[in-house]
Each structure stands twice: as C-alpha cells, then as structure tokens.
Length: 453
Image 1 (cartoon, rainbow, N blue to C red):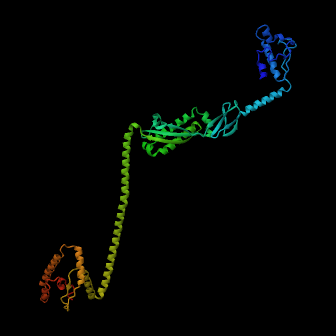
Image 2 (tube, one colour):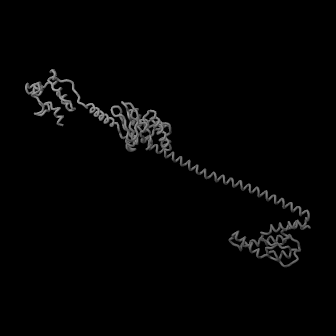
Image 3 (tube, rainbow, N blue to C red):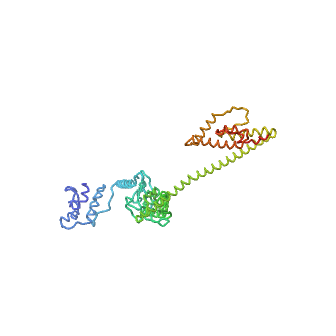
C-alpha cells in the first residue's frame, strides 16, 4: 500500500520520496520537476516529465534502476528506452500462466440432478452436458445454460384455479353433430433431455406453443365425435387421442417437449341450455331403462316358452310311444287270444266273459245273485260292501246320507219290480220277497250272450 501510494501520489512534490530520499540538489534538471516548477512558478506540471517519472516508478517496482536525466529534450542524461531487469520475463510468464489457469478453471460447472446444460460456442449450439461435474471452454468462447428437465409443468385449459372459474373462449367447442360443449382439461408436460436445445432455440415461447397445440388437438378430436360420446362414454379415449395429437404437433414444431398427461376435468353443455339438456338426458335414461326392462322380460319369457314347447313336444312323443306300445300290446294279446280261441273256442269265450263281467261289476254297489243256484244260502261280502260305501260317502259328501240311502233303495225297488214283471212265473216268488231289497236277479239284469249254449 505504501508503494502504491508513492506511485499515484501525483500531488506530492517529492513524488513519493522521503525528505532524505535521493539527491535532488545534485540533479541538473531538478529545477524542471513538476513539483519544483509548481513551487517556483506556480504553473501546472510538465506532462512529459510526469509521464517519464511515472514510468520510472513503475520500472522500479520490477527491479529496474532509475536512469538519471533531464527533461525529454535534454542531452545525454535524457530519458532512453526502458530496460527490463534480469529475470522479469519469467515473472510475466508466471503471471500469464496463473491468469490463463484461472480463466480455464472458470469453465468447470456442476450440473444439478434433473438438469442438463446446453453449451453454445460463440452463440452456436455444440453439446449438452449431463448432471455432474462438467467442463467447457470458458466465457466468451463457450457458454453453458442449465435447463430443468425433471420439472413437471402444468397448465389449465378452459378454467383457471377451479372448475367454476371458466374461460369460455378456451372451453367452448363444437361436436360432429353441431352441438356446443364446455370442455375443461389439464395438460402436464416436461422437457426431454435431447430436446433441451430445441426448447431454448427453436421456438420463441415453448410454453405458449404447448398450450396452443393442446387447444388445437382438443378441438379437432371433439369435432370428430358426437355429443353423447364426448359427455359420457368417450372421455378416456378423447384424452388419449388429444395427448397423441398434441405430441405429434410439438414434435413437428421441434419444441423438445414431451406431453405426459391430458386429463379432462369437466364436460357439460353450456349453462344456458343445461336445464333442457338435463330433461333430454332424463328422457334418454328412461328410454334406456324401458329398453332394458323389455330385454330382461324377453330374456325371461322366451326361455320359458321354449321350455314349455319342448315339454309339449316331449309329452307328445311320449304319448305317441305310449299309444303305439298299447296298440302293439293289444294286438299281441288279441293274436294270442285268437290262437287260444282257435284251439278251444267255448272255454276261451267263457273266460273272456267272466273277465269282462269282473271288470265291469267290480266297482258297482249291486249284488247279483244267480237264481238258478242250487244252494239256498246266500253269501254277502259285507266287508267289501262297507268299504265301498265308506269310499262313496267320502267322495260324494252327501248332506243327508239317510235320505240318499232311502232314495237309492226306492230306485232299486222300482227297478226290481220292473224286472219281476217281465220275468217268468218260476221267479215270481223270489221277486216278491225281494222287491224292497237292493239285490235283484242277475238273470234279469244281464243276459249272457252265451246262454243259448
């Protein structure tokens, strides 16, 4: 500091020298010094002398010896060429090396994680540096500009902040059936590492370019679909199509941007027609409900009808098989009877007669007695008669069983009396005694077709 103050202290008449420094009185041109001139004449200092003295002081810093001399126009003692001291070039080289080293070291940079550094050489892109400690030629030859590629950038289209805060000039668009819908959606994107130079140099405002590309893609996709698809069933498909179309547009513009997500937040008709649209939607829902109910009924009734039809077909087939089997059995039985009848006609005829009468009379309430029987003792199957009477009472549920029995007895008596009037004289006594009985003469009721034998 003391040395520098001596160099730049131009107002000091001694030019930084002490009072005992130098031999001022012995120098021939001492009177021409600026300090002396100022002190003697009171005028301004001589600029040439000031500059020469200044160079001498600078030279003394690097080991040069001051040369004696007078003014610039003096004789042998005038100022000559500056002589560098021995060893001064090494000092200059050392200083130059230090300065160059400092300059080169300024090219080291640390690229943070999630960033890349775009390097330009005299303004032209040369390379991209990855995260970590990197080096490039220092300024002004090369310059590195960091770009954040990990940040997920988001912007809203059709609203700001909340869905209720609408921006209608962005959200209103036409569908393919010429209806207006209000579409609000969010776009998320990030920078691609290899697209960082394009993001910086290819477009003036990359973020605005992404917004405009997303709006264009959404309007194009919505314009190709009907209103019902946009409102209800096609949201996911529309979002995917918009993302792909937006990415294609941005790649064509070389923005270096990758679209991550397109999320539709809300889709509705304009507020002015919302009520009418709700009514139309409700009517459509009722229509769908009725159609579904009809389809459900058809799905239920058609299998039932088919089941009944199949059952009727199976019953008919079973009945056919039964009738055919019965007919075949009757045919076989008749053929067997015919064979036996050919062998013993009378025996076969009697057996057929007895079997037929047993079949006919097994459920009747009358008892037939043959009047030509040799025995006078009558056998009445009272147990079977009582069982048959109890079954008939339970089935008919008559309110007055006694009256019914009386009526039946009266009918049988009249039938018996009618029969006795047409009988022979040999049977008159038996008919008279049995006129009030429910038992009549079997020969009067049935006449065997074989009695002639």
